[in-house]
Image 1 (tube, rainbow, N blue to C red):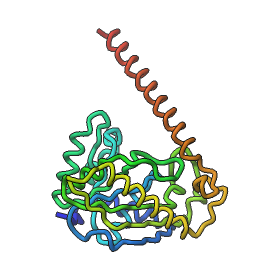
Image 2 (image 1 turned 120 degrees about the vertical axis):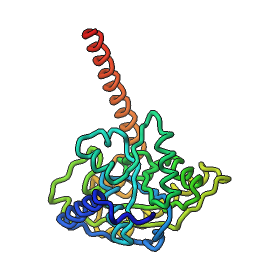
Image 3 (image 1 turned 60 degrees about the vertical axis):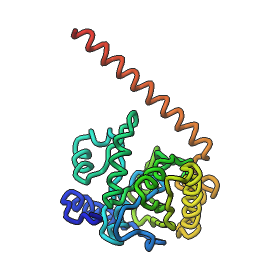
Length: 269
């Protein structure tokens, strides 16, 4: 089954997204939508510059052909009250970072069942607003399931909500958001996943570049514009240093929590 219009939770989420983006008067411009398959499994490999990229992509795909997109999300998101209810109801796939085999298996099966699967191969939001090095999972899943990978670039969504940067409601109002869907990449199990992943990365960067050239707002000096184009976003090198520090800090915090938990259990024992 490739269309899931009867999914009640998904219908509510789509309605909420349309209401939100309508209220903000988001101005979408879509290029290459003909590359979206009307049926059958496919992997949407999406750039990740903002936290709403998944919702924006769902919105545009639904407007195009009423298809639903299943996303892979961290297990922690599924554990949050309210959020987890909607993620499960929309049949998204939980990913345990310490044991990803189950999520990979579920994703491949969903693709074989004719689902459209959304993934962010960069593995997280890129604070530099440049396409980072990609993980090979999207290509490997598509090859195993025998489905195409559709490169998807989203530009402008970072102005609505992104990592470590806040913006006022006024700044979110009337934001142009560009979408570019690239020519499908059809990997096979005999291909080298690393080589095809590199091709995907270059394709995504080209698509992003085309959206930046067409973007109707001058980003000179703006926080949402890459340093390469005259913006004040961190360079990829500076962003990588900050990301490494963030991960180290989170690891220390997790270790502290685990230690306190063990100590607490020891005292009770």
